[in-house]
Length: 93
Image 1 (cartoon, rainbow, N blue to C red):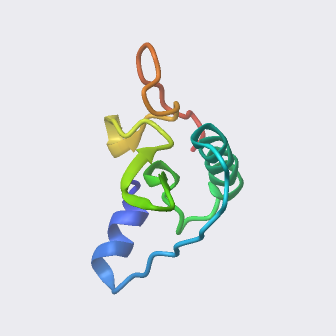
Image 2 (cartoon, helix red, strand yellow; image 1 turned 60 degrees about the horizontal axis):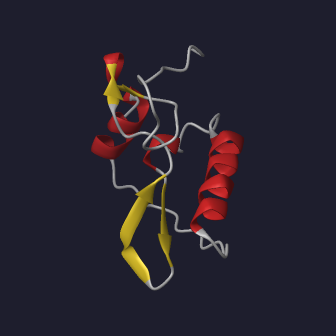
């Protein structure tokens, strides 16, 4: 998790926003989640690497949108979950 996110979680109480979005299939939900993540990635309060998708009636069963492997510098891999081949980092500062 980025340092700002860790500091935000430990410095004061925090809240999580739950934004229900209706998509009829898992592939479409994962695609929409990736699109929303990219649109919100520059917002420092958003941890796009922690995004998951679940079925409405099985919200305890979550599907990772992005790879959850932690890379050097406590950064996350930028590829989709269950990707083939090695992980990769985003080179943006």
